[in-house]
Length: 350
Ligand SMILES: [Zn+2]
Image (spheres, rainbow, N blue to C red):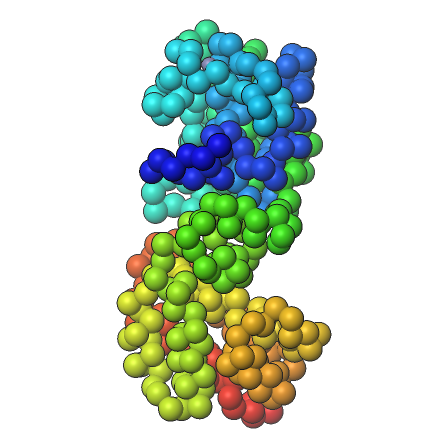
């Protein structure tokens, strides 16, 4: 098969990613045998493709005539042709609803879950299933989670609640125990790299992308467009110069703030994590850049590993600020980060 159209590459699947084959097989088996539970929790670290999987599962249960035996498909697939499939494709199906934090909020509120309960208890509009997808389900606050229990304890006919969870540890045990939990581990490095090479045949930065995306092939794919990925070496050189006081924090921050902020932060997370790992294990295998290795070896000689967690906290606070869209001043945010690095050059007064 050689599809050279401008559509997404063949490696980007319609239904699920290659590493989700077993999960699809497992759920479609119970679906085909008419034993689909009322609540399913797709659980695992972000960046493995759970939301796409949730959409595909929703599509499957709504499809009027799922078919078996697509060439490489494990388990049944939605037909793509029936009225319900067309509505799903147009993102206009009235029997799928999404529940996520509203704009400028980080939590799913109790009012939203009350709407979910009402929606799921009524008859569907197209006569089939009603599907509710909550993402990220750990964003439900305490009241919202308690309100959801009502629907989990008294499920209505032909209803499916899909909870997509990035941080399983934050879910209430009472919710978890009422769902069929399906785990989505991160694919192996080799598997991810192979997939990324297929998805981005033109790129030469596959390994850098995966490093930056903490091993997530999907995040790596999404980052591929960013100029900041290709700036890795020059950013490492900047960092080394700042530490040696050859350039100022302000000038480097001025340069970095022109790049995509999330990528700049992601590089910083990666480097601090590599610093911590090196300080604890002296393992240099994952540090592929010589300048970075010298920086890391120098700093690790100055402080115990625990000291570097303070910088990691600082970088992660910056990541949170950006994720929450609280509009930080980018220049100041990056300056703070660089100051955190520079502080590592000094022995701390006891
Ligand atoms: Zn269909």
